[in-house]
Amino acid sequence: MAWPFFRHLVYRVTAHFSWPVGRPAPLTAPVMAASIRVSCSTTNLTFSMSEKPYAPSCEQNRDVILTVLQPRLKGVRRLLELGSGTGQHAVYFAPALPHITWQTSDLEEHLPGIQLWLADYPVANLPPPIVLDVATDRWPTAKFDAVFSANTAHMMDATMAGAMLSGVARLLPPNGRFLLYGPFKKEGNFHGPNDRAFDQRLRSHDPAIGLKDIAWLDQIAAAEDLNLVEEIAMPANNFVLFWKKNAQPNRLAD
Image 1 (tube, rainbow, N blue to C red):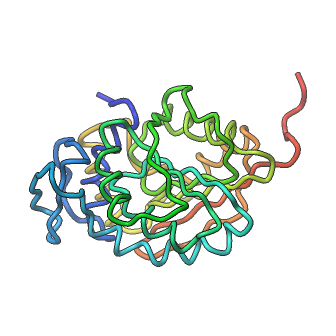
Image 2 (cartoon, helix red, strand yellow; image 1 turned 90 degrees about the vertical axis):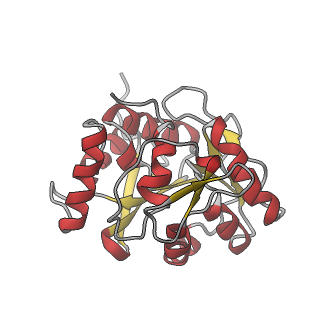
Image 3 (tube, helix red, strand yellow; image 1 turned 180 degrees about the vertical axis):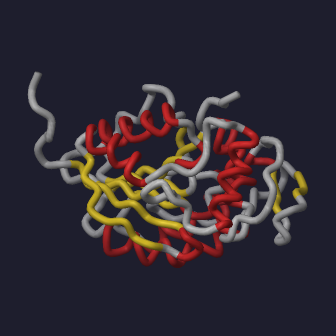
């Protein structure tokens, strides 16, 4: 059974944020992101509503992601992060990108955990998180010139992935930027046995989800006037896919 996205992001806390970059750990049942504290072994979960949700892999991948974001977000003023999860990426990236108002978002039940991180690491360019379920049409009405998301696409089914790309395209102005980090297939192939095993593990819990092919994502994105300008290879067979919204629509008028 496919869960509504961003219900997948509850799952994602164990499926990505609590895993080492090599992604060897097994999935567990969905749990509230705001109630998770993950041990460094990544296989033992303890629960406490009084503690911030913690994910070791956020600390492992944040520096390499930041090196990609910094030159590609020059001139950006407002950025929306989709599926902020624990909030750890936001509190690290926002101070390093002081020219950007970094807006976190997730399902409502995840916001308390994000807010705990924001409260402990307050910066002027990091406002309170907002509720966002990409599978709905209730996207923000505020203006954003960039969108970022980490480790979300493989937790979506095809319909949800399409809804995310459509929502991003509607939100962005011409020349707006979308950066999507995570593991992907390329030309139908996995980047090694770990990715194949990770995909199989995801599909054992929900056959509709799993690693998406870059070409498949880009076909949907292109129909939404998003132009893939870079595929940036990252450690542990991850990528950052970097789209820009076309200044003029590609599609022929009806």
